[in-house]
Length: 339
Image (cartoon, rainbow, N blue to C red; front, side, top):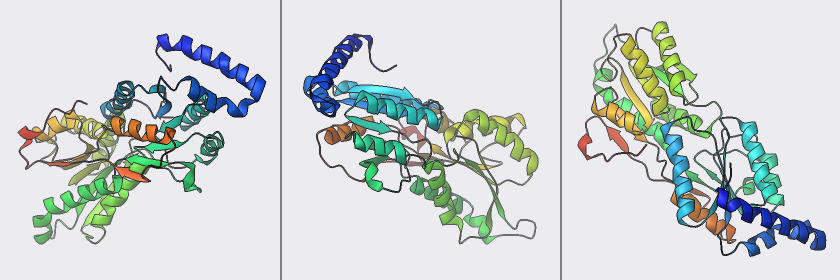
């Protein structure tokens, strides 16, 4: 689960040395001596990922793994399988293992105070990535690197406003509102909350836009399909689908096409992630706007982890570069996404 087989023997011998050290000088010296023993082999980073629910997530994990291998960093990896309790167990195992740095993608924003306090007590710095957390003491983690979900939501709202500007100017008695369906991400996750907030910030001064349906699809394609079946039965007049990720979008497109609807034409679709399938759908006219959520963060994550292991300060917040792809763009210029 953690290391390549060839590393297991070495770690076993290190564990024996740790036990010997504890017997003679006390366990308080454990972390320092592990670092001394392995200083020629690079640092050890514990990385807890939330799961593998999408092509985006798989690519994000691979990005970190490849960056660690390139820089000679030993990566202790754990897949939480979408469960916070699994992730907390993983973080505690990293603490017991005495890694040099902990990096994790928090499933939800709350519930991390105790385990992060344990990490600090053990002298292990923590880097949060992709999703943000809400803790009483902000010093419990060193920094955040990832997406600006609030900006992503705003970009989605701005696209919808621009798309329907002519309709807003020429309302008739039969069309009072622009009706919006929202496919919400995982409840309690910072990215879902940020995307929803940013979208609403843009539309709040335009009462002709209304969200008639908003439900969590947990960022899963299968649930996107299920929700689409539901909202298509509930509502006949839908103008826009705002989806928090491509997986749910692609599931919704399947449900629409089964009912003879033309996604991107009958209903305007704006989605977030920019995985290859979504870009292909944009080229086919089935999606109208794709907002990038950049998964290629591995290199920067590992560099920040190395700085933390060396006792250096890092930026409190570091956002990654992201783009927006519109149906009116020259889509032939978009390079293969890789995920």
